[in-house]
Length: 434
View 1: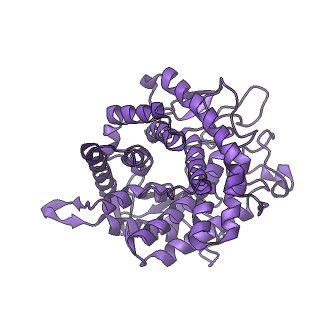
View 2: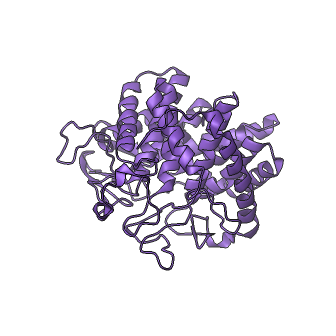
View 3: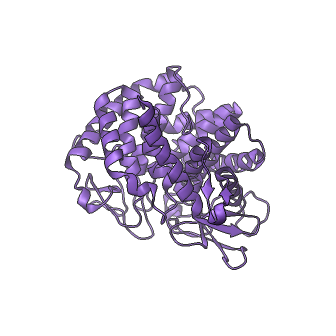
């Protein structure tokens, strides 16, 4: 990508304000018209949010978006939407033992609301939910040869790259003084489980150009890692939503960029330096890979090894083309990755990463990615969910998915916009654990 070294957070404020204006309309539309009997909204089809059964991992983004809207604008109507729906509907997610998504669902709702609690009882309610969520997530544990990991909904053999960002549920619960209680009153440190998962992810889900295998390109990620649960040994890379185990699914790359950068900030805040070198190595490798393998405007295609990318010619030497005939872009990867670049840039005081993050956000905040149509419920267009399964909508007359939004893409666009807005206005620095 081509990094714009002249852009500043203050220069992005007019675009950010426009995003919040559009966001308000879309949150109200979804809140008023979505049929929740279908399940949690996941992505749009013809501009309307719909569900897609796999796991219930997006509801926290739906209600968390309203809380971010209040944070950014001060409009209390959105705080009420987020608060009411969290209290009424999110409890099953707190006690959900079947998923690896607690950081997505519960930190995005109870965690965001905790900042705005007005009474001790209200704060205690949010904190109890966060404590329990972290412990429930930590219970989903598979020991490995050199530590262990929080396993995915696929089963105990499966480590997903996504979970490095969802890991924040353990971080928040630990910071609130909580532990996991096991058989015989054995106390399990949530921080230690967090660190073991992060180290295992960094070792097996990220490549460093150190000749691990034929496809060892520094910064490349694999979506899923398979372990032998009988002896804890690593067996092979795999992919659920990417093209192959030996290519890089860019949303998985973005989860790693943001997840490792946030954990660096968390370790700095609690004064724990033990695994900082591991986290930093993974964060820099993935961010460097993103910069090197993304078109000039900072919007990636859905997988760096997608089979028809070669038909686009020198696609890295020009802006991404969401309306091409061969391979879709994924704006949700850009929304997630932008925040990872910014946080790593700030952590290291590194201008390259910082300006790269602003460059990506600058592109997202404008058409053809910003959804300006009043009839479209999505906020950020050209998101991809599951290309291998063919779940994404292909408009009439097109050959590939385009023009649609996702709940996670919209949420993370709002979150990175809030992050930059706070910096531009000299407000308190936004973290998941603040």
